[in-house]
Image: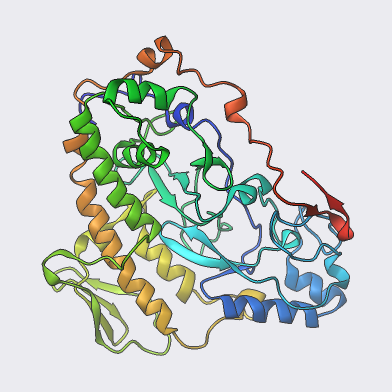
Length: 399
């Protein structure tokens, strides 16, 4: 970014001190683009016995059929050993399984290798998760989501970026205690003439964050007019990333829609740049602007990841192979919205230089003001005592 170097711009890690690695399921089958498949997979697991159940489950060093784990905070799943479990599936919840890819997850701690309970404790309707991305100059350094981001298992068949550190906007449920360096809001209030809300700070951050060797950097400003323009752009980006509000629309009355019916289950998508058309076998969707097709996160095209998660054929006999036999209409609706979101975000990203501070607030200035470095306590999770949490085999503990 012009006028800013990685040496003087504050690190996101200092401005939002508390971070957690993303939850890591460790196996692919507890996550899916549709909730019905997850319930069917669970039923298949419950019907299997002995070695067959073990093979379907997918044993890892972190989880076996005999692992003893507590419930996920706020999620009423069973805590008995999976080897003798029965009964219905825990109600699936929405998660972000990749950039701009909301899917479903069975919220059962017994199925998840590294669940990060501290994130589940603060996940509610008020929360926004900022997710660092791989430091690729062409892509965004930071994404935001309203639902918990999870890391997909590595797979040669499904290209995917692995999310970086997750930084919740709030340290407590109910939108309480912003995850910002102590004193940062007071510093900004003194120089801007008003106290910004925590979401304003995140909006500015999303709008201007740039990749750096030690993580994303965030040039700040004390110019009220520039701050207003930056936060306005950032709020629009946040609404698009979080799918918050009405369904977005392309300018000029353009909107992507299905020009020719999609097949029962499409194969590899093909893009015609001249016609701005996405071909799914004999099906056609247009207009699909090149900016949407080319949009990358972490060096991987977003639409490639999105399609791979839905059209890659799993190994027969696995729980991942339990999936829809025909392309659901809801996936088409999600795809049309995703094309619009990526197009609008690409346009907003081209305007980032309009909100680049010519004389940004440096890390040195924040240290002189006593804002940096953040305290050790601000880097640790807050103690959350909102509800009892069931431990292994039905025992209750209060954390």
